[in-house]
Every structure is written in C-alpha cells, then in structure tokens.
Length: 473
Ligand SMILES: C[S@@+](CC[C@H](N)C(=O)[O-])C[C@H]1O[C@@H](n2cnc3c(N)ncnc32)[C@H](O)[C@@H]1O
Image (cartoon, rainbow, N blue to C red):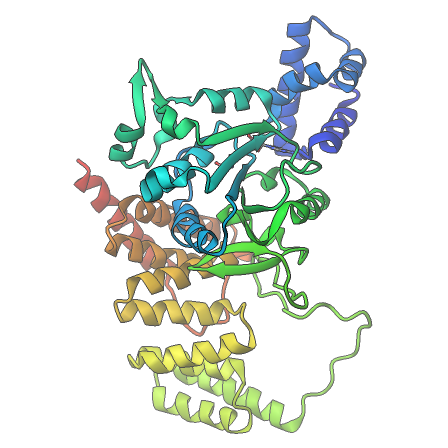
C-alpha cells in the first residue's frame, strides 16, 4: 500500500503528461519499489520529496515509467507519404532547409527510418536541405538513440537489404552507419510544454499521446500549434489520430493517411471515433427541442426507404430501385437513399453508379464511413487495388472496430503481395470477431444495408492465415 500514490501520479502528470490509469498504475508501483530500493529509502513521503526537488532523481525515475516500444519503419505508409510526397513538395517551395521532428522518438528508430528513406531518395543531396531531429523526455533512451546500436527486435518487418546496407553487425547488435547516424540530432524536450524549434515542417508524434489524458492532449495541441510551420503537417499514429481531433489544428487526409495542419479557413468539426452506433455529426444543441413531427414527405420517404431495404434483403433489386426512385424524386440528396441505391448498383456490378452515389454522399458529409466503404468495394471489384486500399484504410481509421473494412483491407494487401500487413490485418479481423462474440453490444456496424456473416469471414481469415503459415514453411 502506497499512502501517497496519488501525489506521485499528479507530480508526473503535471511535469510530463503521463497519465496513470489502472493499467499503468502497476508500472508506477514497480518503478517506485525499484528506485527506492536502489536509493535505500523506505519511506514513500521521503522519496516523494527527493523526486520533487531533484531533477537528477526525476530523470532516473522517468526512465522506469516511460514505455519506449518502437521499431524501424513502423506504420511505414505514413513514412512513405512523408518522404515521397511531402518532402519533395516542400523542397520545391523552399530555399531554406526543411525540418522534420520525431517527437517522443524513443531509441531513435523512427527518426533514423526517415533518414534512411530520404537518403535512398536524395543521397548526398539531403545535406543542407533536410534537417531531422528527435526528442524525448527520457534521457536514458536518448542516449541509446545517439548510440544507434540495435538488437534484432528493432528490425521487425525491415527489408533485409536495407538492414544490410545501413547496419554493421557487432555481436548481438547492429550498429547504424555514421552517414545516417549523423543526419539526426537528439534532444531532451518535454513535448507538452516545450518547443524544441520554431517552424517545424513535419512533426511525427506517433504512439505517444496514447499515454496522455484528454486535457493533456489538448495542451499538447496548443504547444504543437506554436511549433508547426504554417504549411507543415503533424502526424499521429494510425490508431490515435481521431482521438486527437480537437479542431485546434485542422484534420486532413492524403492517400488514406490522416494528419493535422493549420486552419486556413473557418474551423470544421470532424466526428469523434465511435465504438458501436453512429454518432450524430452535428454538435449537440444547447437547448433540447422536442423532435418535430416529420413532414408528410419525410414520413413518406421513411416508408419507401424501409420498403427498399426489405426488398434489398430479399434481393428484389428492381422493386428496391423503384422505392428509392420515389424518395430521390422529392429529395435527390437523401443520403440513405443514395446509399441503398449505391448498394443495389454494387450488387448488379454497376460500379460507376456505386462510386457516383458514394461521392454524392461524401460531398454532403466528408466523414461518411458508409460512402467510403462503398467506394472501397467498388474499387476492389474493378481491381483498382491501391485505390481500394486507400478507401478501406480510411474506414478503418474512422471506425477501428468495423471488421469488414479490416477484412477487405487484408484481402487487398494479400493481392498486392504485402504479406506481413495482410497477415497482421487478418489477425485484427479475428480479434474483432472474437470481441464481437464475447461482447455483442460493443459491435461496430455501419448504416450499410449489406450483410457480412461473421462465421464465413472467420473461416476465410483462418484459411488465409493457414496458407501464409504453409507458404513460409
Ligand atoms: C511508445 S514510444 C513511441 C516511439 C515512436 N514515436 C514510435 O511510434 O515508434 C513513446 C515515447 O514517448 C516519450 N514521451 C512520453 N512523454 C513524453 C513527453 N512529455 N515529451 C516527450 N516525450 C515523451 C517516451 O519517453 C517514449 O520514449
């Protein structure tokens, strides 16, 4: 029993933002017992005082409570977008060097991955034009980053040729060559409160904000706003982007990757990610107004839509189409009707109609995951694999619990010979299907009138995973 545990949690949160929920509390407790034993202190109040007044002690302690998990080329599609699109674009616009910051860089793998990718692209042309920085709160992990020697654990998913080209084996470790090591400088910075540099063009802050609570993440955005160049971009990890959307910075996407940039126009509100049912897009009204009785045409439309859905379930497409036509005649922008018509078209292999309807919905609601799913499916059936991947990825970003999007993403990866992402994504589907079985109330469904039978998809995933296992020996 630690009598002043909340004081410790508060001190750490105030200084570096880390938030100790139940899962993290065990880490805090074990760090306390380890550090107090090393210092030969048994009184929790005495050690708290040490931690509060001594920066050195705080540094020693922080090393024990940060989670430094990282590896080379992690979530590499974001790195591809940065190196293949953002950097060339910025270099064209600029005579001064552009700045990239890996914030919460841990042992440096992210920053060095960028350095390797950019070296592949520009060779010596990088010098004087691109500056790469890494920063972290943990001094011990920064020392490891500067040293740049890694165990095989850091090379999960790295192309062996890249590993051979840029690293030399020394016993059990692989040492990064100086030509890459020298391209990155590492700094001790508290990313919530301090600004390492002004006008950073690209900030990566991946897999860091997951340890902060919402007020801290807001504070972080305020700080990042000051650091980000007016034309720059801020990238979070795939799973954390939407939880960071406070409209302090503007959420954008390119090639299915989300990022934040400065607002150049009036702020817009993007939806929060949802777990089960679709959240309303509009902000809640300040005054609760009793729901108005639907106007006769609205009621009429609802009846037609209900009937259309029933016909679609029965695969009576021309009847369903006739019902939808009745709705669209009065209300050509009706999103539900456009969606159902899009699904009917998909069933009949009229892919351009499906895509057209989905685009009409997106023109009204750029966050419609249903429309994006339809576009993904339409692209998939037309063998436009890369486009299908981009759409499915967007659905997955917005609706991480919606397994059909993960499943089709896995299929597209498999067809593109991307074995590792495919296997990983099939496993995600299996996990989500298990979660669905154990806790059906948390299931994420889209308002998409399509049926995806879980058992069949589970079987397909198992089959594909077994095939992969068989192929790899
Ligand atoms: C899980 S690692 C992420 C590494 C890398 N960005 C990635 O995605 O692979 C999180 C890192 O954030 C650092 N961190 C946590 N709070 C921080 C803060 N307030 N300022 C700077 N770094 C922080 C931790 O020390 C840790 O090394």
